Image 1 (cartoon, one colour):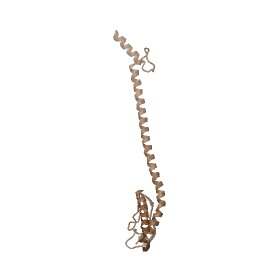
Image 2 (spheres, rainbow, N blue to C red):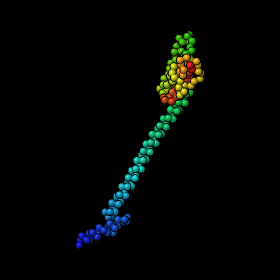
Image 3 (tube, rainbow, N blue to C red):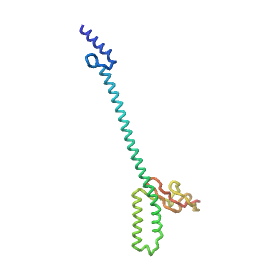
Image 4 (spheres, one colour):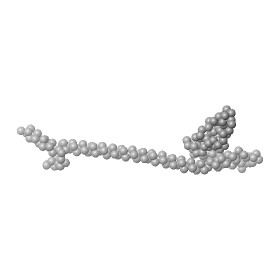
Length: 182
């Protein structure tokens, strides 16, 4: 008879598993505890998934803002560098056209050092001149302002009129060139 009573007790406890209330003696049944555990595990998995998504979103946001900030700095420095290029052009024209009597003075040597410092600063910022002379004409790098008859040099740059520059991989100012046509 004790087996019948035990079986009846278990059946009664199983029938009460759908309620959230503890049984009469103040404790939850085994089935109720398993259900609550399953709910808690499901909720914990949801929270973990949300946390992982939030962490990934934050990481992506941080990377994106760092990239945007770096691009903004490059763009800002590009504007300043673009304004300095005419100064460099003027130095190079002055160096190319210096009279012999002035070329021997210490003053002119100092002036050349200033031009060299300017070139060094620009190079340290990632500015490089665009090679043009005797290269194939590339509209992405060169700006053709004159086409000249040049047998055997069809589509080649035959003269550089104004030097062009790149800032890392971006063209700051295209090279103004004279292009040969056959």
